[in-house]
Structures are given as structure tokens and as C-alpha cells.
Amino acid sequence: MSFISVGIDHENAPLDLLERATVVEENWGKVLRELLINSNINEAVFVSTCLRTEVYASIELFHGAVDEIVATLSHVTGVATSEFQPYLTIHFDRGVPAHLFAVAAGLKSVVPGEHEVLGQLRRALERADEEHAVGPELADLFRRSLSTGRRVRNETMIARGTTSFAHAAVTLAMEELGDLASGATGATAVVVGAGQLASGIVKSLRDHPQKLGAISVVNRTHDAAVGLVNECADERITTVAWSELARTVRTAHLVVTAIESTNAVISAADFSSDARVVIVDLGMPRVVNHDVDALSGVRRLDISDLRNVVDKTLAERHAVWDEAQAVVTDEVNKFTHDLRSRGAATIVSELREYLEELRVRELERRQGDLSDLTPDQLARVESLTKSLVAKIAHQPTVALKEATGSDRGQRLTESTRHLFDL
Image (cartoon, rainbow, N blue to C red):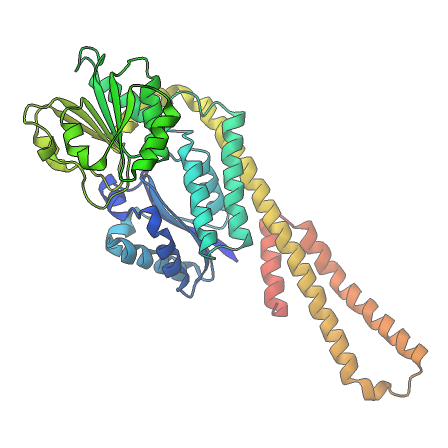
């Protein structure tokens, strides 16, 4: 069994392509079912966020699996395979845990060390398990990635400072807001959404030194918005009905969107012609219509703008980055060794079972030739043949076990399977 990961991410693909290739979480199950129809894909986990759309799978044939994954992504997103091809990121075998563990550690995020990615990976594994799309080894790969992500954050300073989309988005928004409304004292903000990201945004706005006068939470599911407001326990934070979204944003100084939607929910028509407002659109696909850019007083920002916030702090954090990468490498080595150890134990067991089956079958075939032997003599023949099988299996067993966890061990395992048709 081999691992593969295929997809696109913010490091290699343009934001427009990432936006069009994003699959909302409620449709992940459909993607998994389509993936498993393919002949070269045995198991799969699907991840789709504002930063990446990726498939992790255990496969039969490499090239066949890549073609099947890309074709499936094209079908479910409506993006042509030719658009995916120039930007694909593909990893195989050891490269898969190396990539996934780095993702979990926050080393592949716009905001290094951000913690939201752990929740995204956990939900991807849970959905794959619900769809019966993942087996023990692929599930273990994801569980080990989550463990690696937690270890990196516990043992290094990668999570210092601006470490989440929510924090980065609020930092950027408040910098842009500036003195738009008397130094932001009394300024009003609207947060569209009530999920994990929106929750982080509301709490970051609540705790920001540059205090806002009022923060409105608008969400399709009103109960979720009420729960978030109650959790924040701040009289400045209130809920607004979804039907009142347009009226609410019309008088806001700051609007932050953090929802999944296939259609824009805010457009230029929701603002007056002389509106002065900062909009941070974290939806993916983006949920603020581009026509707001025609309004002279509107400043619209999105995920690509967050990189500017992060770039200011990255230069001085190379040592921290190296420490985090060292933890990732250590965990990849452990996972690879454990995986190969399990593989060596399995192939040794299969080889011994195969040789024992040959021994028993041959004795049964020659039973007529042994019919005149006494029970004691038959027992000696049984003992002798068992001893011969053990001696034949000894050297392959030693070689496989000694090479466990190495590339040589992988080659020996593959050769043993091929030679004995295991």
C-alpha cells in the first residue's frame, strides 16, 4: 500500500483558482464517494479550505491515481483539469507525511503556526471515517499529523504573536480602520458568520486595544450567533437577524465575512455611495461582490492581503521555524519507521505462513509414500520438515527485520512479495 497526496494550495496556486476549487464542508462526503469509485484509490481523506484543496489517499498505481484524483476534483468543482495541472502539488510515500505533518504544524499556512488547521484536519478525518473511506493506516497518518501539530505548538515558539486567521484578520482590519471613526472609538463592526473562524474574529475584536463601540454578529443560523454572543459576554456584542444583514452593513465601519457560500451575500448595493468602510472577506469562495471596489470609500481586503501582515514578522523567526521543522522531521522519521516495522512484521508472517502451507500440502500429497511409517517415524518426519522450513525462513526473516525502517527494507519487502507471490 502506498500513500499519495494531490491538490492545490496557496503557496503554488492563485487565489482565484483556490476560490473556484473550494468545496464546502457539507459536500466533502460526496467527494469521498466519487474518489472511491476509482480503481486505483483504496482509501481517501479530503481537505478543502481557503488555503488548500487536497486529497490524501492509499493507492494502487501512482499515475493512474493522480489522473483519477484530478479528474474527480475537476468534476466536483467544475474546474477544468487543464487549469489544475500547472499548479498541482503531488507527494508520494514519505513525502506525504512530510507534507501533511508540516501542514498540521502550521508551516504551510499563510499565518505560520495558526491553530485553525488542526480543526480542519480533524474534521476531514472524521468525515472520511463517517463515509467509511479511511482505513487504519491512513487514519493513523492523520492522527499522527494532529499529534505532531500539537507537539510543535507546545515545544516551539511558532505559535507566538499573530498565529491565527482571526488574529491576523483583526490586526489587518484595525490597522486599515485607523482613525476612520474618531480613532475607532465608537466605530461599529459586523461579523458575518458564527463558526470557528468567526468566533475567533469576534473575540479578537472584543479584546483588541483599539476598542470598538459595537459588534454585530449575523449568521444564517441565528441560534449559533446567539451562542457566540453569550460566550463572549460583552454588552457591545449583539446578534442581528440574517434578514437585517444589508441594513446592518450599511452603517458599519468594519465588515468581516467568515462563512461558506456559493453566492455573494454582500454587494455595492448594500452601501451608500459615500460609505467609508473596511471590508475583510475571508469567505472561500469570497462572499463580497467585487462591485464594492467601485465605491471610492470602500477598502476591500481578502486572504491574499494577510500575507503582508505575516511578512513583517517572518524575517526574525527563522530560528523558530527551524525548530518547528526539526520536530516535524522527527515525527516523520518515527511514523515512517513504525509504518515500515509493521510492514516487515506482516511480510515475515506472510512468508512463514506461505512456507508452512507448502510443507503441509507436500506432506499431504506424499501421504501414500509415508503410509508404512510408524507414528513415531511420522512425528520425526513432521519435526524434520518443520525444522527445514524454519531454517529456510531464518535468513529472509533476519534480513527483513534488520532493514526495518530503511529504504533497503522497503526494497526487500517488495522483492519478497514478488518472489513468493505474497
